[in-house]
Length: 319
Ligand code: FO1
Image (cartoon, rainbow, N blue to C red; front, side, top):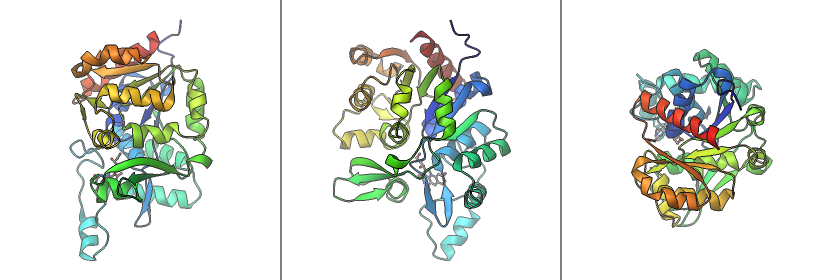
């Protein structure tokens, strides 16, 4: 039997929802037991800065620097730079706060000097006194594109922020994914992992880029993998996941998420975590071949996050 205090875990995360569970896991696991791998498909270059939204959301959340009301960016933010930029008729559709800007300046300079994104994130994490490992899914450039039912496609941030997720989607592509390599930190963490936790993140634009990296699904295949539903009571707690599911012709339910993961990744996921509001779907999720637990997955307080983390960790031990 494995000693739970020695077990190793990998958490796959997108932005806000994923970072909440990542924080819960970091509260209950020692630094050497947890690696958080963040999606980089949302990354882009803007105004000359290299921006990594999901990595920054995870870092700020673990550091206690995050803006909880907004979901992204830093607490106590000011917007002098953005205001000044607007006065000069610069591009202001993507809100870069003054504090947040410092992160982008540091990252951009270090990348320009030849450091990898993994090195930059480790450096930023150290400056933020984060003791758990946070790694990008890849050090290579992968860019999510959103295909539209009206024809054509948009870069992710143009779809998400500039166009407020209004265009109707028909699918997603991850430019650069075929030649991207999972980061060394990601590969090593999965290698030693006793279990992998897929946080409650968007299946199409947060989880899919991570799992589309060459070789990753094969590497995960012999590990217990548990996914926490990102849809609760028919709604995404944050972001456009429910709207996307609807536009792609899927039922916007936890069962719809469970079915999507089965159709896309076969037997890769062993366990599925449902919220109490969706308890009535448990039997149908089990009929898809998942082990299940039903618990509170709505993480409003730190206690909600740590309690869900404990439940998920106990669940992985039973698989
Ligand atoms: N999300 C928004 O909805 N509006 C913004 O203006 C915005 C700015 C922004 C700046 C830095 C950063 O790291 C994230 C930012 N986000 C913003 C969130 C971002 O677009 C993420 O990709 C989403 O949170 C999806 O995970």
